[in-house]
Image (tube, rainbow, N blue to C red; front, top):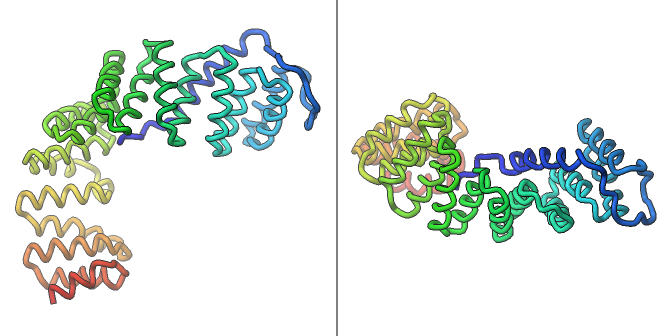
Length: 324
């Protein structure tokens, strides 16, 4: 499933904007002060400013320490909870960050951008049911932002709830039909539902919007192979830069296309070129040997399978023995 969107980074951008709005009003320093472990500035704004300065300098652990103490002293301040969560994300502690977002939402206000970020973090830590709840809440509060139904649709697709996912993705498309990821995700779902013609159509639309993204070519190529149009699939891959054609998924699909066209030698040459370029690439050597064997070129098959066996490929020795 497409996950290319930099989920947490995009979500944090929403919350940065939200936190700026929150800080534009008077500070809400609610909650009583308890015993202090750190000497904190005297106001919420000063605490946030100090933490923000440390964060911009890359001192995320120090910023987290200040904000953790501040949330103990002011447990009902939403701004502190969000700022702490953002530092925890920087420190690669997403489970703790999610706890801070749920606390921030319980304090209120339940801003859609905060719901969205909570959902995205829940998604990254595998709490998909909670992610759906947050995305639905964000969408209900702000039905004009296309990212909310987009991310909701992607999570629903992960869970195999394809009808609901498609409905959500189409809602996103109505708000911004030029988002390639929407059509790419719909193409992926169609392929999973064995509707290869529709998948190829959606993938072509995604590719026309974002031609540099190889993911859409891969989906379209799979769909084209499945509906018996491997020559068109090959055209997609041949148009890619040579370095991109060395991607294992691309080579696999290209060799599949050549196989469907009864051109096993051309499939072998793809892998042989990769194996010759990187003499430590045992997998490509093995695949080259397999395809040369199918093409009836025994000496070439033995050469590449022997190389793969020497490189430790587990299956190569058995295939080589069979050929011998």
